[in-house]
Image (cartoon, rainbow, N blue to C red):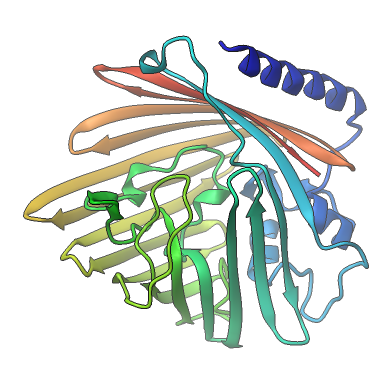
Length: 359
């Protein structure tokens, strides 16, 4: 391990000791804690995994009640994150990434009925900005840098990595500096319409049967880079799903301008302290066929601890992905420590260790 890596994780460990000594009760997600006066265990089973109340808070535009004004406070939060990766191919080196360091603000502006999501990563010089406008109880329009899935938000998972079924075959670099059509698990610039077939709202994560259609206006960006906007649609993504609290079931279809097609399904199911997630996708691209599937579960024995185990299958090649997550918090912020390994037959395991402070 390099000196930089040792310093990074020693600092994270010292911070964890300090935080553990100062924690008196479950702390709060910084921005929403200041606005609502609530602790973060009101909305999360384990950071960032939501509980049913958190799902309703999200579905209501990050508001406790329609028209209810948040406390007067700066609508802003920040995080400082370091992530180190080890594997046989890297030898003794441990590359450190600060990509999870960000400044962000989320919220809903009642006067113009607009939900906003603003993120900026100073170390990567990247942003993630989208706006969502509810046009009626049955229709919302979202535009900006989005993930195509309306049913499934990978950012709410305990895992660091994304299940393989979110990136069906045919995505990624095509050569000559170009990348392929937008894949459901990645981010790109685009526009999405979400239609509520049943239920009282078409807001993200609201209950009922939903139908969603999205048009990406950029190729999918390679990992760690900002997508490049284009006026030419790169494909079309449609899905239909049903949500009941944190449980959801859906199917989706994508067709790309280069001829790629994919069909997929996704399921989320809560049972006591267990949360099951899974899905599969089948794609055709340039005459080849690809099948992917993922099945995982997250166990949260207590609010501060979570254990996840996932199996990924990509064209018959299986990977085991165990994840351990620990969350420490106080009224002034929080620290999340995560260790995740990807174990694939015939390939040396890759382990990612991350520490992220939120305030």
